[in-house]
Image 1 (tube, rainbow over the protein chains, first blue to last red):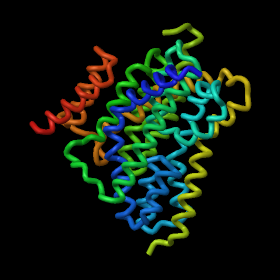
Image 2: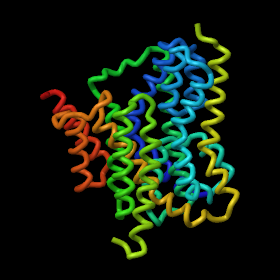
Image 3: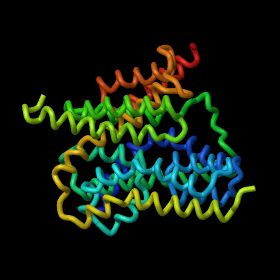
Length: 238
Length: 108
């Protein structure tokens, strides 16, 4: 294996993920601080980040545990929130399985919104081999993992000390917005994006708590794009 | 008083379930030679739908209602969207969006 190529791919992944880290770091601090505030032990709060490693579901679980909810509600809520990753798994699998299939357990464990979004956007380029894609994906995903664990631990120890007025969390939707602008390169995908955005916004207006609008919006968007394609592809591309 | 054993059980079950969700198609597609073409068509719409559903609510919804037209997040998001038309550079797009967000927040 050419070590230089490995380093170049991984470095590109780290470079691309760095704007997201600005937004992820305060989120990780909150995940740590919120666990302690809700009455979880430090080990349990850290356990959520290490074993589950999915922020929105962690915060939902923490909130429900703090409210004294039962086992079933906590587990079902967290898993429904994470069900969106079924789509990520299906979407990204064809790109990352051609190289070192032994890595698939690791690649599964570190699959997140951010790792998926950055990677799938880059994978639209046709000049990348499966080796490039796998190394890029791991560069992004493992960097996120390290930052998430470290910031959770800091949040547990000292609380969430970032001033909310900085609104650093806004860097995350901005990154997704920038990636979105590159992904809507045909009419079907534009329909998918519009339907996805509208449904996700409507869901957020109805129920802000558990980020389910993402699952609903993404599913509706994929269906919308497919219907558009089915209706218009017979008459050629528009 | 929180039941410590229940919390640990919940953490472990969520962790195993989440791993299964993440690995569902990665595992399935490693068993078959080619992704069925109909499924591949659907998958082509996933990035656009997911990215839109990730990005837009965080920009236009706050505290359970649509933000007003003078909201710093909406204006910052619009500025970043405008920046995507002229550049692909992620740092430029983020800088424009965050910069406008902070300026409008301070002025507002």
